[in-house]
Image 1 (cartoon, rainbow, N blue to C red):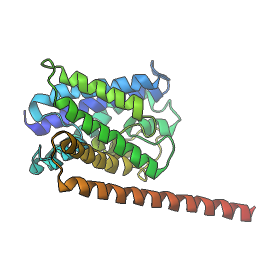
Image 2: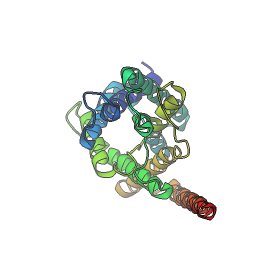
Image 3: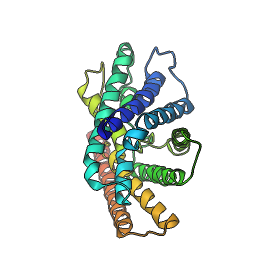
Length: 278
């Protein structure tokens, strides 16, 4: 099997398990409706474990554009293969989301909450603040890539690595996932969000495109920083791209702060106009 299919299938499996566990939690009249956050994080963790097992010997099981770009930034993966890997990851996530939709088909019309339906496909913030949300995704994916590098530097019993990675994902979800739903993977969020936009989901609402750049840009920045920081601290290889990534990250955070201020100004203006009208 070619690496493209390995990445596609592995990412698809992540979404089937991860999106599936969220659907069971938020969609009405499921057997698991109203379960807790621990169950969701475990579902995502096991999904990653199965995805890594499926693709590990075929493609290296990146299953995440942030991982692919981070490895390319450190010179551990050829740049010419990056586009095909990311395309495969996006397609796999898109297909996985469709499978989840079909599996829970009768439950969409039973659920009135449009935000809950979107949550099956993509992430959203607990408190909408673009700068804070961006920083959360950067930090979560920094930990992901830094931690994956640490795990990769150690030897485990043959076949155990995917389990270690899966438990690591659970830990990130439990510790850092409460703010944004811990996308930490652009394909995991963007592919299913596109599926939400295109599919005839009963009673669905907006796909929340105004927020969609956060779980794409944040993980790419955090992943690059995490991989490059590991190289600098543990291998003594400080490359100029680390400084460039730091500068780019600061610029993007400033842009997010400006977007927050603009939105706050618009909200204040709307409130003022309503008061004048009243």
